[in-house]
Length: 188
Ligand SMILES: Cc1ncc(C[n+]2csc(CCOP(=O)(O)OP(=O)(O)O)c2C)c(N)n1
Ligand SMILES: [Mg+2]
Image (cartoon, rainbow, N blue to C red; front, side, top):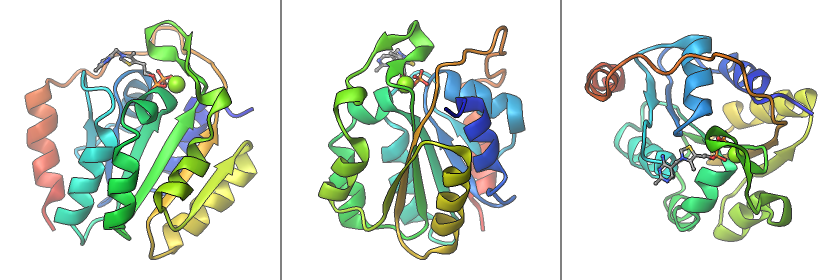
């Protein structure tokens, strides 16, 4: 099984300098921050569940940009209602990635219900035109190739393992700093 850190690393290899990334609360943002801190990353500190809604708004408002949403299973489950909204708007510049470790790892590893609930099928039912569920790194690579070369909304559900990184630093920027530098990155 892929480690989440490794999955984020692979996703980053498909992200170009002017792409925007919105990452969910917790370890996903910390791992993104550790791997590649950049103004085009919006770390959604505190507000779990809102990364996909923000990604949708950005994708509509900044059609010249490619937007990646990186969220967890807990985050996605928390905002299931956003899936049909994203699907009905269908922004072609949005790549929605769910890093599904079947737990709320950031707060101690409590089980979520994602082992018994197919988030990719839910996205398909909600109207996403393209979804993939991937379990291995090669599958992730080909899903990313397809999603980033396509001109439609896409969702990749990546099944990842639980592999906390000892001593991983918190995002060191204040929310205001994250906002202000992200604003500059949104400009064409
Ligand atoms: C509204 C809200 N509820 C709860 C929390 C506490 N919280 C922060 S991260 C997290 C777990 C997130 O789980 P998931 O999205 O699956 O990501 P993982 O930590 O597993 O990578 C929780 C419960 C919060 N920050 N905001
Ligand atoms: Mg999780």
